[in-house]
Image (tube, rainbow, N blue to C red; front, top):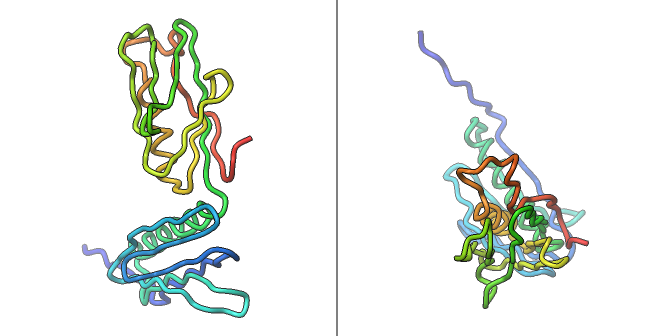
Length: 196
């Protein structure tokens, strides 16, 4: 018994409106979005998908098109649409992640390293050597409230999320009961814009 793969012949047509004050450039495989907070560039390419900018009465739109609509092409078109929406949101409002520093046994000291390329966590579970988390390019890290809150912000959602994950990962406890040793840095909030 052979399985037949059914393809939808309707094609794909996803429209993303470009807001006022945002400039989008599609140059071959590269998509560049510029806005009030800065610019993001990214490579978006699939052999059967076409990304272009179309002028409409209501304003310009980014259009993702494909002649056929297989499962893979629909998935890739949806992914590209999400990337482009996140890029537009990033250059207009930005993204932030809030992390909470929790210590019950040993008071941790958290600081941004010189040049802002890392976050140093010292005295974690009484360790003498500080642990350092990498800060991705274009991401700003602020330590607030006597070192009890870390705010990671930037225009690139992936870079902001990766930096927050890096900070969270360096205080991951191995070999201890997490119900007793609750020391660590934990993600508590994420959103669009600037944190309060």
